[in-house]
Image 1 (spheres, one colour):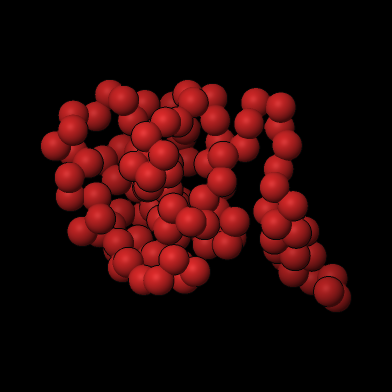
Image 2 (tube, rainbow, N blue to C red; image 1 turned 90 degrees about the vertical axis):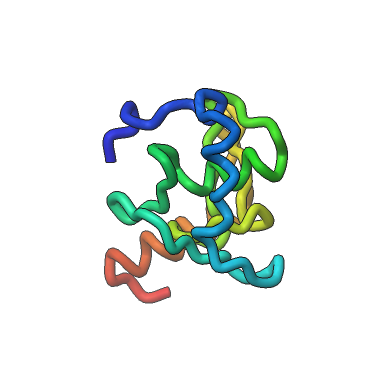
Length: 113
């Protein structure tokens, strides 16, 4: 994925955000909300932006330009704001994300869990 092709959320006209949730299957807060819109390189996208970043922005109304939004569930097509966490500039990752990443790496490498 070419990250520089994505533009800041603040550059989108407000009308571009109005149809965002029409592309998601909204479930209960503890389940993944699957993205039904465009997928690019395995990531949910909406109007040239990563969809989970838009979901985070819509929930918190704030998103630092250099902030990294992660899905704690490990599902790249999940846009449930309750599954999203912001990694700050100091690079600290939430413990659950570290666990999911370790689990994923072990499975990919074929190592026993």
